[in-house]
Amino acid sequence: MEASSNFIHDIVENDIKEGGRYYGKTVYTRFPPEPNGYLHIGHAKAICIDFGTAEKYGGYCNLRFDDTNPSKEDTEYVDAIMNDVKWLGYSWKNVFYASDYFPRMYECAEKLIKKGLAYVCDLNADEIRDYRGTLTEPGINSPYRERSIDDNLDLFRRMKAGEFTDGSRVLRAKIDMASPNINMRDPVIYRIVHATHHHSGDAWCIYPMYDFAHPLEDAFEGITHSLCDLGFKDHRPLYDWVVEKCGPFDPAPCQNEFARLNITYTMMSKRYLRKMVESGTVSGWDDPRMPTLCGLRRRGYTPASIRNFIDAVGVSTSNSVADYGLLEYCIREDLNKIAPRGMAVLDPIKLVIDNYDKDTTEEFDAEVNPENPEMGMRKVSFSRELYIEREDFMAEPVKGYFRLFPGNEVRLKYAYYVRATSYETDENGNVTVVHCTYDPASRGGWLPDRKVKGTIHWVSARDAVPAEIRLYDQLFADPDPMDDSDGRDFTEKLNPDSLTVCKNAFVEPYVANCDKNAHFQFLRNGFFSADDDHTREKPVFNRTVSLKDSWKKMNKGK
Image (cartoon, rainbow, N blue to C red; front, side):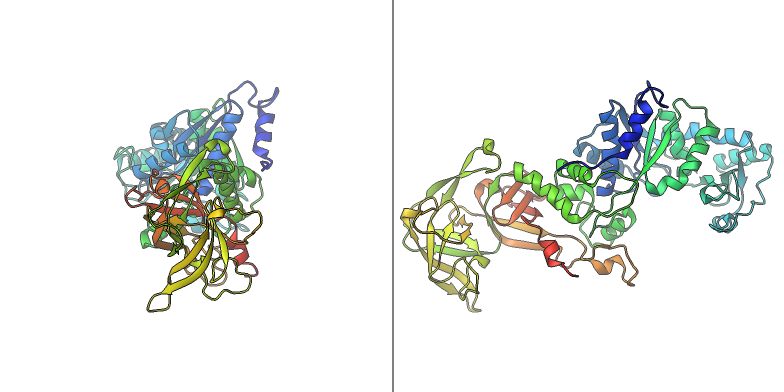
């Protein structure tokens, strides 16, 4: 799959060529998540762009935690973010915290006050909003806008000293209340928050707003290319204003924006993902149905599949929605090359070969992965009694059914031809045992003079290992879970079939004896990964993805 175009790389190449604004300088980027939740696949796009751009041009990328909101942040999220970045295959030049820059940011704020470019305002949040105006009407100057420099310095220092309550005062940049860009209408750059910070403790009770902190952090670190999603485009004039008025800085960072990642049937909102975790809708941030990186990892997605998906989506300045099927295509392509094959029976019934010696056990040779011969061969154990899928036998077959039914012959993968002769049922009429005979001459599963249309998989009952297999599907049944135009909220769009648990499954011993997070293709069933709950004594597997895109077909026309 060819990667899509990347306009950011075009910008960087133009910036570093002779005569460009960063000619002779090292390309420096940063990935700046707020540690207030777990990263989702939308963040993976930013990670790949920030780290990938630096790598391509021989530069560096910092991991920076934008921890300017102490009430929502935690070291749990810091650790998780670092783990996710490493898992995706990237390494950073430095780890920084916005909170480490608080003293320098404070100095910049005082610098603005002394230049007459910032003032302490006593309006509350609602009043500030009312004074700001609308898209068609200019704002109104705050009654505190013309405070003297000395008064502003005194009040700001008293804010820092903790004399005032939360929300009673803010520091605002003095720009232009009539600006057509609302972000430039005297934005708040500091507020009072009496809360213990996860990194700086109780050292501060005033905290910079993101729009003030972000450009300063970039400038302090020597960032050349500050790469953000399109939501920050209207904030770029403020970014440039802060850099200019608090500078000079060399190099002065520049901000460029790209379209954020959106995927059908997927919710990309940390706030709403948190609601699902806290309400018990999902089992946690790492629930394999979640779009979080830890959830995708647990489900069995690989770093390569996610990076390939990001490459395929491309980098542009136009918002669009990627098809969920493309993400599934990328993981199928990756696992098809690296996942060993194995056999698992999810809904078993017993198959008894009546003319096969009950004390005999055979072994058949099977390729570990036909797509990758270097992975070698393995042995598959065979005996008189096997487990097969319930759906692979029908007492009264429908038209076009080519698997087992009385009188019909199928191929047992790797082994023999067998013909169904009879079956047993329980008191409810459910088939429990199928009897058959085998043809010894068909060893290896092939007779040139007698073709069969059906091939089924199986597990030898003699050494089958009981397992729990979890069949995951998309969490939402609606292509746009966040669209509430139909009066439904996202909780009403959940897919009731997003998880089916097969508690009575059986797997081959070699499959059961794997480590957590090992990948397999279970023949005819899909790609699976050993869950975090997996042990060799009690195997647990998650379906990563089916073998084919059944979702699109099932939802066609809806």
